Image (cartoon, rainbow, N blue to C red; front, side, top):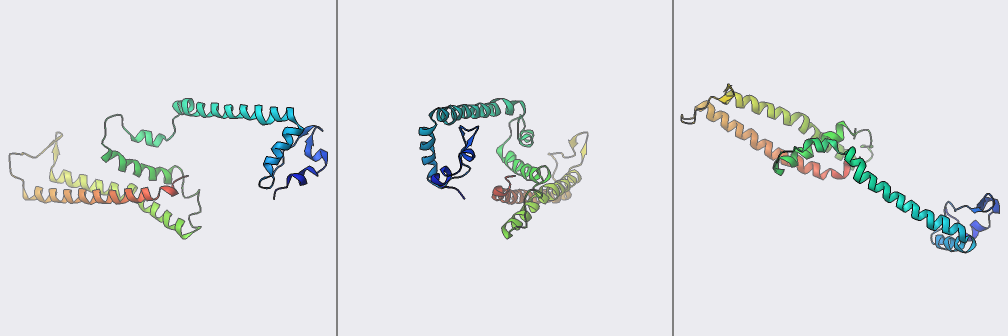
Length: 215
């Protein structure tokens, strides 16, 4: 609880000064009393006020600006942050169609595996947080387990439908498609379609979880 200015000034001189003359700023004052305090020290300690409240504050402001400039213009160029995201974006031209889901998937993996999201929040504190963590786990498991498994199944079926030899498909476009190839192609299309729609669902889920990924 803060003091009123009059209560603070009633304290013994030694409790309000260091070295007998250097005024001590109150730890806390009541709302509205800080303006009175400013007027008090300005009139009673004019030289100290100019040095401490004007010159030192100005130096602190410029020191902060210098630190901010150094961080944004020098340090982050020498040691870039968000390396996980920088590694994700290739130098070559890439469609946003590909980048957006890959970025969101990498973000949820980084949150769980690198930032150790489970350890830095009490996810069981409320029903809302518990539900959020369950959704995070669902997204993480899709990205790290379900999606790679589906991709592996796709590759196996692709190689079975169109066997590769000497890096070329055994598929003569001048010849009619075999029954097996047609069935395989239809299954491949089905896998791709399911993956596409599931990717969209998980991307929306991760975007909705953004307020919980602030660690």
